[in-house]
Amino acid sequence: MKGIPHENPIRPTFSTAILWTVLALFSLCPDLPSAFATGSSPDPQAGLPESGTNLPRITSRDREVNDIIRLIREGRLPKSYRLAKSYADRHPRDLTAIYLEAYVEKKIGFFQRSLRTLQSGLTIDPGNMDLNILKAEILIREGEVEKARRILKDLQKNHPENALVRKDLLSTYSFTGNRLPNPVPMDQHLFSLGEIQAPFSPEPLLPEILPSWESGLSVLGIGYQGGAVFAGDAQVETPMADNLRFLAGSTEYEGLSSGRAAGSANWSYGGFELQWGGRLALLFEGGDSSLNRGGFYGHVLYESQDLTVDLQGMDDMIWGDFGQSVQLGGLESGGSLSAVLQIADRVSAGLSAWLYDLTLENGAIPYGFLHNTFGYMDVQLARDPSLDLMAGYDDWTIEARTPAVAALVPEIMRQQYLMVALNVARNYGNGLSLNGQLGGFSDFYNHVTSYEGVLGLRYPVSPHGSLFANSVYFGESTLYSGPSEELMLGLNLFF
Image (cartoon, rainbow, N blue to C red; front, top):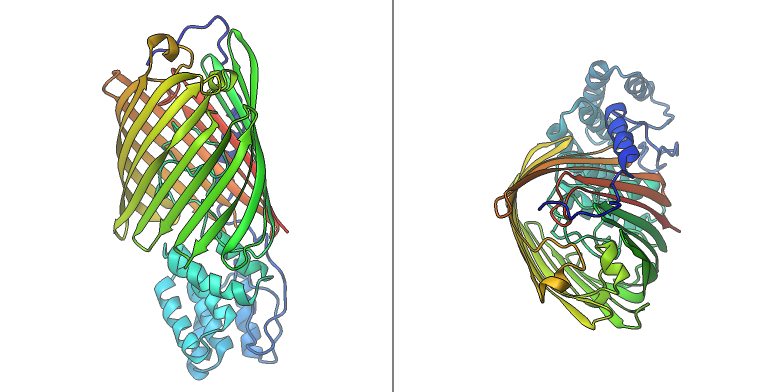
């Protein structure tokens, strides 16, 4: 896996700034104030404050309730808990008393006790929004994301404009270690077939959580020894109605390499997404490229409590992994099948297989077939922050048509490697998600060892928009010869 010599190699250095930025965020954000603090008044029927990181200002004619709330705001949790528990014992059917007791139990860290307290209130009023929001937040913190998502989806249907429900629901689609299917979902058309680390975007096939229009803009840059490729995707999606929504967009590619003029390509597309029962999603896109070739992309995703199955396929789409493949009019057709099984509470296993047909010069020159199999085990060591240990094996083969054709794009023809990675992720009360990963690789076919580093973040700047970024560094890439860097930036808007 030695680097291919070039007269003026392009060195991968453009993501250093974001690496240090995300590291700084990890160290400076132990408990950020909520960006969604609404300060709204309590429900006049229930008399409860909204849940969340900060307790909003509320008024009550009950002096004892006011004293409990004042102590919570002052951070005097032991005393506020004694008062809240005493008050709840004397008012067992008062929802305000039940909420305050559960809220303080959550703040102290008595999560299971808080869930039991909340259940006593939900027995009285099963649809109470405030009690359900607090329950969902505790379930998220405890790693019961699917249960929390179901609660929040029901609340969102009845309260579509509630910013807190929207924020908590979005957080259930944030980084969750390596338990997402592999390879990375290709819906944004910005992907690298060499990716096996944490996903760039933490919202794969984002379901019908927002009854609004969505617009997304993503840019990806990949630098490697002897070349670089840049891509940008702009997309707009209609609101979800009757489990169906439509989308349209365009992806632009720019390829660079030593000794060749820059090349470009375009893919314009339209399609739809269909949901069934909250477990099955279908995405289909058809379009046309700048190479005057019609193509399509399809994605089927099935999610249950213990099993995720991911099937993706494409025909005559831009081969955008390399500057050389863009310059030479590369196309790819094929697909992937991935599955992730939750074996135990904190143990999961994944398996994926890819098969692609790669061509150059608008299909006139067959490049070869890629087939790849990757399997891994994931053990979650901790939940707050989420800490995952992952170990896997990858077998990668490209059957190039001829050595001369293989030399046109610097693909690695054969790999067999073991990898171990440690992934850490944390979701903050204001919706910020931070993600980092360190991994080591041992390619015993090419007798090469390597390492990777991944840093990423997503931050909701408002209930109507969020930013995300992800940066990857490989000491010795599993796709490119030599080191490589990848940087992705994006913006999602909801309106």
